[in-house]
Amino acid sequence: MKLIEQLKERFIEIHGGNPVDIAVYHAPGRVNLIGEHIDYNGGYVFPAALTIGTALLVRRRSDDKLHMASMGFSLTVQKSLFDLSYQAEDDWSNFPKGVISILHAEQALLSGFDMLFYGNIPNGAGLSSSASIEVVTAFAILDQEGREINRTNIARLAQRAENEYIGVKCGIMDQFAIAQGKKDHAVLLRCNDLHYEQVPFESGSYQLVIGNTNKRRELAHSAYNERRSQCEAAVQILRTVVPGLENLKWLADLNEAQFSEIAGELKDEVMQRRARHVVEENARVLRSVDLLRQGNLVEFGKMMVLSHESLRELYEVSCRELDVMVEAALQIPGVLGARMTGAGFGGCTVALVHEDQVDEFIHVVGDTYLRETGLTGEFYVSKIGDGVRRVE
Image 1 (cartoon, rainbow, N blue to C red):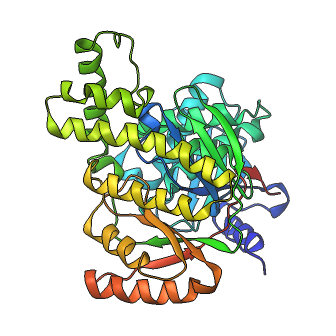
Image 2 (cartoon, rainbow, N blue to C red):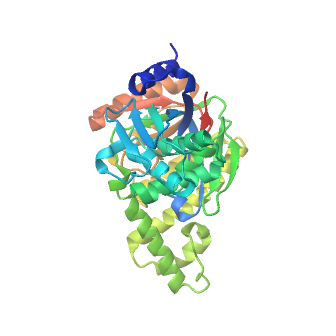
């Protein structure tokens, strides 16, 4: 029996009824190929949608109730559309609740819904399981209500839910890549104005291998918000003390030459390192995309390594587990590049590995990682897939 039929059976066990009126949606996870901690600094990022993600089965109700269940969690939640305040005890359901709360406040939803979520993105791994839930919820509810489907607006809505409802000051990269992803393409996104381009990711005989450190990182309780505040403070200082920068809005508006001249105005050495990472990483994204368009995967891989080094040394969001996995990856023949991906402090790495070496990569890196950290890593060989969509 295929997965969708199994999920429909489980849906009926939980919610009753029959399978005829159940709609099925899917939103992917995402991996960021390069451009980390740049989205909230107004620069360029280069993420791609994965084939793993979140499925949502949904059916309209005749009342104002939301009945939410998940295949991954035992907790089921029942709420009214008029009582969707954040509750810590509601755990995972706060992600769809946040989206629906905003939608209902702005568009007056016509009814409640029965919902069943199924995800095969590892929670806490840095592959955007929460953004995937948010985007699939927004897309499904708008579709069910017969409202306009605008993928950029869906990304904005999902980001708002994360910022205002969950309390994580994330940028828009994750939600945007999940909403606008395209099979065999990565998304070059300029985050200050959401201009984007879908760039073919022609990797030939090389595959993306994602390594999960299985060191969980809870984004809301990590140093993520602290890094964002440091960057915002750096912009404010530069606007104040550097003539001609009175209107500076984003660190990523600065090029490398400009920053070299004015870096000394940031007297706090930590703040200066944070800003340097942003400016240099933003430039690396554009160089990386040019290299990819030229078919120069070797140099593209080198950009991945430089990105990881910067995240480790300047932005200080890597950790021993991520570093061990990246260093082990780079010792394997046929690996062009590897880096941490996501916000850091745990989560995942991504490596560009020749298809003939994938099995050895998984075996050797896994053994090294277990020996060095005592943790068991998990590895996923993932294709680049489509963004959020209705499946049936």
